[in-house]
Length: 80
Image 1 (cartoon, helix red, strand yellow):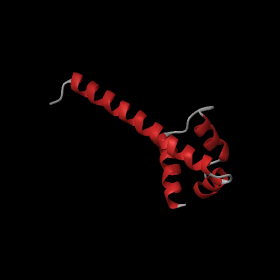
Image 2 (spheres, rainbow, N blue to C red):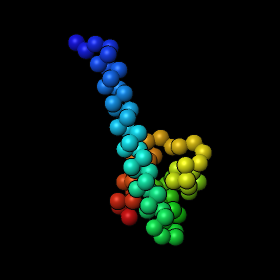
Image 3 (cartoon, rainbow, N blue to C red):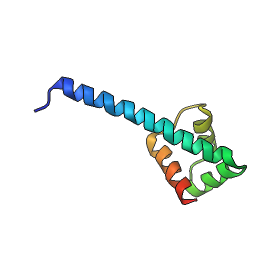
């Protein structure tokens, strides 16, 4: 049986690694969008995610979308 200290420590580690992975994925999306004019529109059309959401994400403006949206964008880039 786990103790509460172990559970708290594990969750902190998970949150830390999730934050690092989120930044890595956002940087991947940013590089794709900035690489060529029209990539943001292409990504929005392919993913069904609004351009304004993508713009806010890569420019760090407004509310950040959830991890599900970020993963969906990164996966869509791999398909393009």
